[in-house]
Image 1 (cartoon, helix red, strand yellow):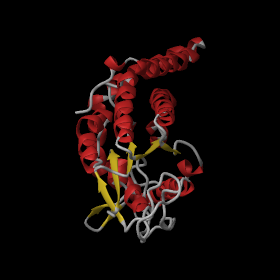
Image 2 (cartoon, one colour; image 1 turned 135 degrees about the vertical axis):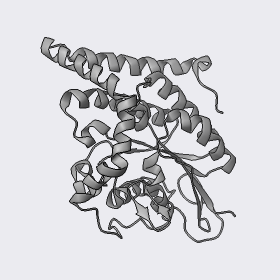
Image 3 (spheres, one colour; image 1 turned 30 degrees about the vertical axis):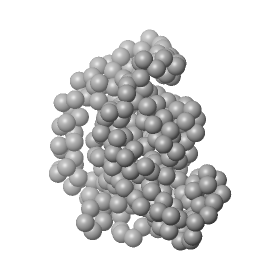
Image 4 (cartoon, helix red, strand yellow; image 1 turned 180 degrees about the horizontal axis):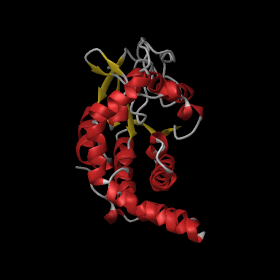
Length: 298
């Protein structure tokens, strides 16, 4: 019997940004992989019947900067060729940080990706995520449009996770979001402790489902957390490029969205913006019943 195969799809979060190790990055998915299998012979295990396996094969297809279209067009076909027993798809934040954000397109892409992996028999792992505006500490008028977008993506991920029978992690809330020790210098990605927390929470869900047969990852980091000066160093080096790219792509639109926030707040009509976003999500999910509107896997 071959080892259990775990394939991870997504962006920088799954690639392991914020959790550097010798020779590259590790991240929550690699930490989780260590606790999925257990030595033993063939036989049926509890839950989905994956059974005891002689180890785990882990393949990380995640690429920093990826959006849902990249997962659909590039990562999905590679994942399907690997015939995974377990597949994680954690994606969506980068979509919210682009001027091309379209919740209808995000919904249709995720539906295809989730469906294709489940049709191949993979246990599907998904997660909802915190909004980047809050993590960066942006002013209210700038943060609210990003928060609204992330809530829309999370609502879609919740609905599609239920639709496709995924093991879903609620990572968009909880005390870990405000614990500075959980986060890396850039404040957008978990640090080692945060990646370990994600791995632990996924492991608990998979253990409950009878899928994770190995020990849970340790909650304690191997390496010291970055100091106060690390954030300034990140901004002065890699952070400047990140900010410049976002200014070119998103900032003009975000400023326009912020101006709309201010106008609606002054008129007492801010609820209309939330209502419009809710209608867009409902419309996007309703459209899934029309197969001709769905993009095909690459």
